[in-house]
Image (tube, rainbow, N blue to C red; front, side):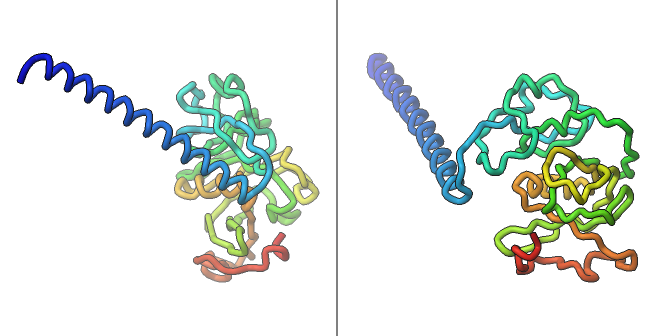
Length: 231
């Protein structure tokens, strides 16, 4: 094969590779645009940029630039105290664990006035308080709760054993997300509970003392509910 032909063939392959890369990049951008439009159509509202964890961040970890990124988020679903500037997160010490893909908030970096005793084998997570959370005056530190995701008229059990570690006084009167309660979760339940909290679908149930397991009165599979009544 003549050398000139080899050079021309190599150049052609290089151009083809560049074209394919550009086409792939355009395809990714088009897919992201389509996903954004679908989200807007589903939830309504505008899109804002928030700082989101790109990996799971553990308590005590110092956030690096590779741990976070700015991502689009529907404004109606933005959690209270959400961080929008990367400089407000990078270099800070995580006080409350953050699941991968979750927006960072001031709660994740708050200095707690009193330390909580985290049970062995669990992870402490801070959750914004709100009137729809289902947490009333009967809930206090040490209470055992059951976590649900309630969306589209369906209630799904997310965590069968949620232990309250700390909770603001007068929790029942709290209607904003300006205060938070800290709970202990099994590691496998953290991501689902944080995701439900972020989208506003998280609800808690308070079992009676004689209820030994979730199966006694708590559905183990998705169950249709009256969503308006539950809220």
